[in-house]
Image (tube, rainbow, N blue to C red):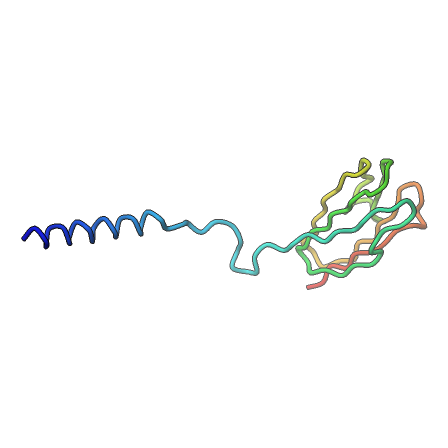
Length: 119
């Protein structure tokens, strides 16, 4: 009788411990999860890479690797507004639509790049 009681108590305790250790599902989504960011380095007179193709919904992080603030803007002035990125800092940009984003330095319109967002 004592053995049955202890076995039942041990079973209940074990079941409780296993149910208490269950981790709830957090983050991500069933449509593909979280997409990693893509990096574009800002140099003194260029962007690297200057051309990038990513999936719609992806994010872009512009990283200013220079020792001075840099200003960037998209050609339509809407997707990336005239943004100043401090030296050794970054700017995060996400686009959920299928499009082509053409960007350049605010003070050097001839120096820029393009990001193609595909389906």
